[in-house]
Image (cartoon, rainbow, N blue to C red; front, top):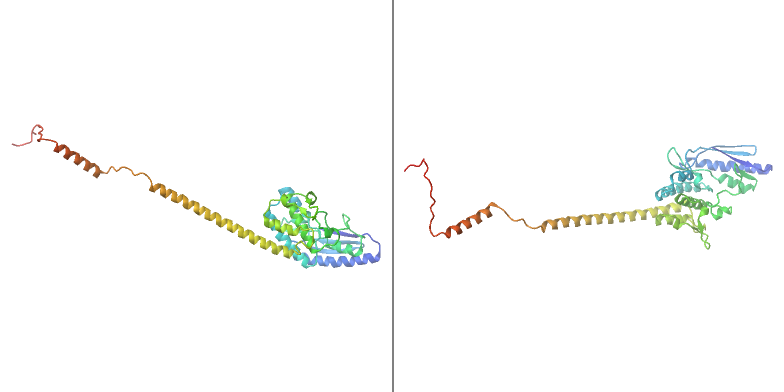
Length: 315
């Protein structure tokens, strides 16, 4: 992918200064090619008053395209995105690079490996522009400020970006992915200037806490660095895991108690069952003998029953 930086001025001094700054910033961007979530800078060169950056082409949908096709992000996907992109920003910031234009259209999910790739750096354009004034424009769209309205924080809109400016843009991006709503569709607190978003999302308190740290209007109240945000995320995840373990243990105890109660009820039912009358041969024989004796005792004399002698008898 080739990006073009055009010099509108005819002043030789401006052109010379522009070339110097362009080469310096392009070399800085070239150092980022070793990171798995950044496109490689393949080459850079200038022709007359035209400067060119040749970057690796990343195939895949942007996150804006993904949300339109697959719907809003779940909380789990937001956690994964935050961990990936905060690590990327931490790397960039240690290279003294501010991205300046983080938004869903500048994040690609690479088809090759499903990784999130951060594209379209504004660093070259911003630094050169600050140095030589309003004579520089980036093709195809002219601009005097790097960033996107709604996604950029106040200090960046005032052309004073800091590393924490990228964190605000990342927070706004998360809100867009969670809700599908553009930044200008959220209300603002008239007193603090803070974005009113908490009632628009169904997420854990832990994720709300992290997003609040990213989205503070004042730089002083925002996370000071990507590293600080990552450290807080680790704490929040530990608390979530601890809560999940507690809930799981409570559910296990409740299940065991329920099973024990069911078993006790079954045993009690067997113990209290009505006995069945015995019809054993011994009981029957004893009763028959008693009846016979009683009947025999009531006779005054023996009774003889006539019978016919058998033919086989001998007298």
